[in-house]
Length: 115
Figure 1: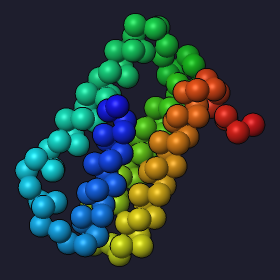
Figure 2: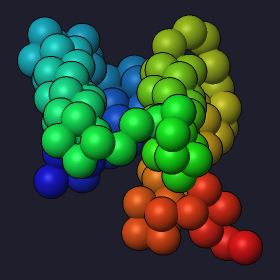
Figure 3: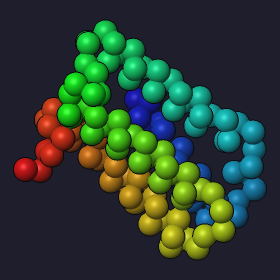
């Protein structure tokens, strides 16, 4: 549920920034994604500790952590700075690919789920 909320906020904010919508600058719109992503990350860390699954030990978990960092970085790149709508949506598409990759890695427990 939190992942879906995170992705929805990212997509909505990228659309808003692309059309220069004023609501994107509202405090709630700016703060809510950070709260959601922080809870999501804390949940992931808690689950890792409970299950004794650590990124350095398990290649699939390391891949998910790297993909999570890439998702955050690409999402930030989609939202920040002076970019064309095409560039913003390109970064958004790459961020969404990271989400898809993380899901497939989680299901397969394999860092290369396509192979």
